[in-house]
Image 1 (cartoon, rainbow, N blue to C red):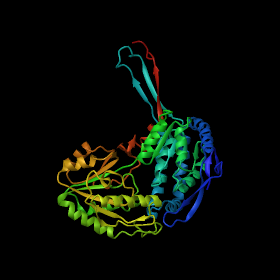
Image 2 (image 1 turned 45 degrees about the horizontal axis):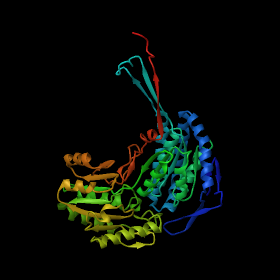
Image 3 (image 1 turned 135 degrees about the vertical axis):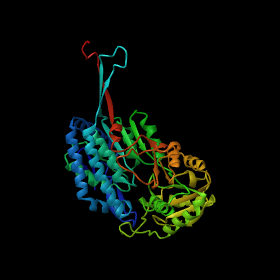
Length: 479
């Protein structure tokens, strides 16, 4: 498969390629270009022309293009789901569902393209300005670079590319190295729908491609989902050109389980939110479970019983519950984190073993605050359960993290729900449901090391546009 530069599907200028491997069996699915510095420069130059064409395009036409892409995604959902499963390793049901979500996202931004509203601001609250009026409008930023992670690549990319185009920008996509293929295929639909030349481009390759886009003078915004370390690096580099940066980064999401929670329903939610969703590779997955001590034993038993029944295997098999991690490096990293947790005093109740890229769903007990297993993000199917005695202690433990993406609370007590909502330093508090949830119409993002800004159909267009004011001095007649 080739990448897309200036309306042409092309190889890298120096001929470099990278293999795309099936993480379940190591099979090479395809080879894609490894973009060079010259390729990035050419794409940024083309994006200047593309951004001019997009800014001139009326909202109704942007709507038509994005709606056409949404329909094409729906028509090919099953095929795209299979392609994404092979390159990504998530279960076939999950990847097919992700494609459906992407279609909804494109359609949502198609509608929002028609609703990029400004404001009318009366100035008669200011002495001497009684006869004046101000108007505002939102305009495109110019060129947006979308840097996309491997875990939910098509869904997360859809927010960035559809949002950027709906706002009238040109977008350059840097897809994940491990799984760029479904993004490339949907990009073909975008070209077929009638985007101007250079309005959307795809640069495949490694992190040097992303860094070149961050450095580029001709890029006005970086929209990146990825690790906190990568986010810090982007902020450092982007500061030199003062470009806008939106980051959705890692998480160490805490779930607080109160004694009045429904144990069976809570256990189901924890298993789904940590093990059977994304093979545990989700920024907002259930990462730490804080359980009121009287409920700790029953909940641990319920979660362990469910976990031991999970089937680890081929993600293309509908009977599989947990597939492989994205690559061997990721699996070995999780294995090392579990070994460190055990060395720090944790016990393994279930799982704990790695087989190639596969890691067994693992339950840890005895994880102490301050240890890496408590404080750091584990990007894989590992679930620590930690007892607490006092609700305020649980809130403090939940906040005891450099991350602040999402949190959950399981309880029937509305007072506790509102207290958690008040004090937890996170972007979203979820009630009686797993943290591993994202609704495209809601603002999504976190605090602290989890990033900045919010992404969602009603929020992204503001992030990807700029506001301009028109001050009309004394336009009202004399009284």
